[in-house]
Image 1: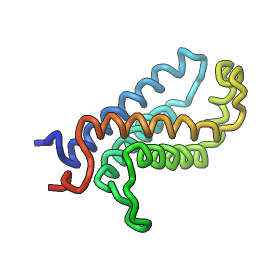
Image 2: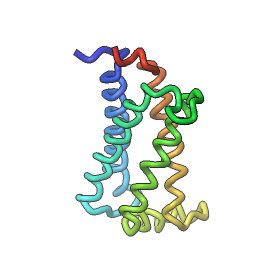
Image 3: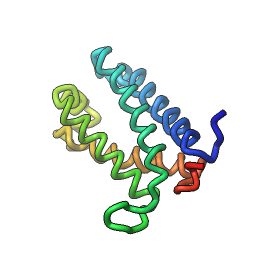
Image 4: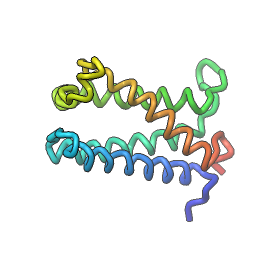
Length: 143
């Protein structure tokens, strides 16, 4: 059984949040006029599920292992979100360029797919906030 105050609980909550975000993109993209390939859209669902799993797993590390400083939850979330979205942009630059062609994105002045890193920072922060609020953080989660 998955206990709420464990690493498995953090990962489960993170995956649920990631699945909800992925499904929102999967079903919301066509309503905004964005035609994503089915393979890429399914890949985005899995990407956000994995992002949630990484956020859940990293909640155990509340101190930086090399530099020995306390890492608050918001810093962990931002680092994970930006890192994962950087990987997404580097691997799927052409598909992400299609997203930048949307009128709503162009009206804000964004033209480069690397602006998605800001979305990654915000989403990573929100995921980490929700998971930490619901399941806690720190090494005691391993027991």
